[in-house]
Length: 254
Image (tube, rainbow, N blue to C red; front, side, top):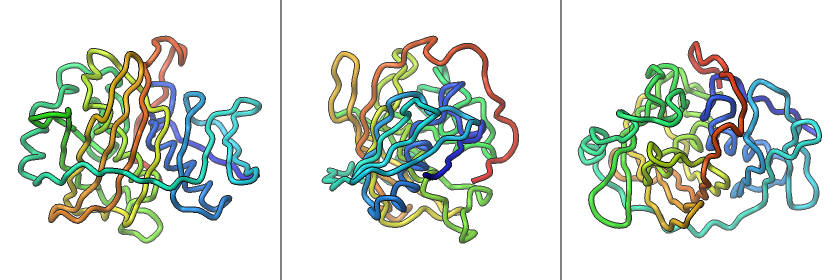
């Protein structure tokens, strides 16, 4: 048995964790429990903030619990991900100008892409639409040094997973129809480095009435791929998290 904790700071919707951050945190812990690197995380409930969660392993799977409530399951994966193509930092910067969240955002305090968060207290990502089909997004991302992990330079695993989250969601117009992450499979070949410019690209792979499948990738500014993810999204149900909102003040502690 192991304990996990998501600070209020790392929210997506107001009363739950950012899905990519939570999945990355759970995957990082499950990697130790399962002895595997490539993992799929399925969220069965909104990951709660500021409460102790416990993780345990049974066979080839790990589970994350909030008391008796199952929050997430983690399984060993063999990801075969068709990665979206690299776009230049200039093209990504042009896409950012059309970011739909700038005019209307369903989760404006989101740690990854929220418009009400300062650059030093969030990832400040602005994934804007790319021309052509299938629908895609791109944005630049220069991780702030405050995000550095144990080595003092690279971001932690959960931050990299978070960066692979929202650029996929915004391949749809989330301002018109909010969706949240329900499953994520990621592979990280190398962790992003703080202070360096990166490009994050998203692609919508399929869309049905209530679900969407997306693929995302993180590249260095010169085109080297650092990681990619395959994600499943589902419609957000208003009121599912209850009233109120946690605080988001202060710089992140990872």
